[in-house]
Amino acid sequence: MEPAPLPSPFTIAFVTADTDEARAAAEALGRLYAHVDPDKADIVVALGGDGLMLQTLHRFMGTGKPIYGMNRGSVGFLMNDYNIEGLVDRLAAAERSIVHPLLMEATDSAGTHRTARAINEVSLLRQSYQAAKLSIAVDGKTRLGELTADGLLVATPAGSTAYNLSANGPILPLNAPLLALTPISAFRPRRWRGALLPDHASLSIEVLEGDKRPVSAVADHFEVRDVRRVEVRMDRGIDLVMLHDPGHSLDERILREQFGY
Image (cartoon, rainbow, N blue to C red; front, side, top):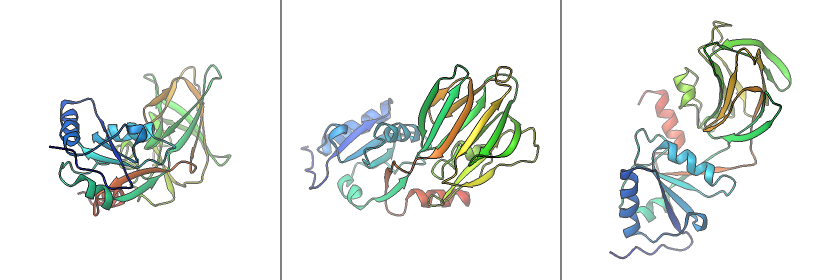
């Protein structure tokens, strides 16, 4: 069958996860629809799971290129249902969800500065059998002088249903102007459950006793080992655009999570 011509004004590209299921989906769609190289496409169709969606958003970060995911993975929270029929019409009717990444600036024990961005969360994690000790400042003011825990994470609304939820953090509506600050297995203060912060807040996290209690910092999949200081803020200069079928937008999915379905 000849590929269906794409109506002006958009072109599409397919990117796939490294699985047989995703590759088979790309082959089936490629036979039906005209497509171009991802760097030249107006819309990128990602075939895989949530991991591929995050990788694709990172790949095209700063371009404003919309990403439309179809689930060929497991959970697929960020993805649309897979169906090879009517793709062009689905893309034309899709609803846009715009999110902003977190900017992580980390300084390690050697004084080296590393910068990375996270769509879901920035997490600080203990590297050894000993719990981490952290000091937390918000907008330059120390709010918690010492947290003893397995770690700490800062989650965006889009990422609040991921690692943050597993750590008993709150689910945030997509358009809420908030960040979730969530401890991971806090030991002291024992009853501290975290905080909700305005999304314009700037966080500074100091690692205490870093030689004895080493800590790594992770922005999605980018890790810095043996950090001493980590600063986190939302980068509003970058728009990340996800496309979802009507009635299945990201904010609708987040709302459903709050009611357990």
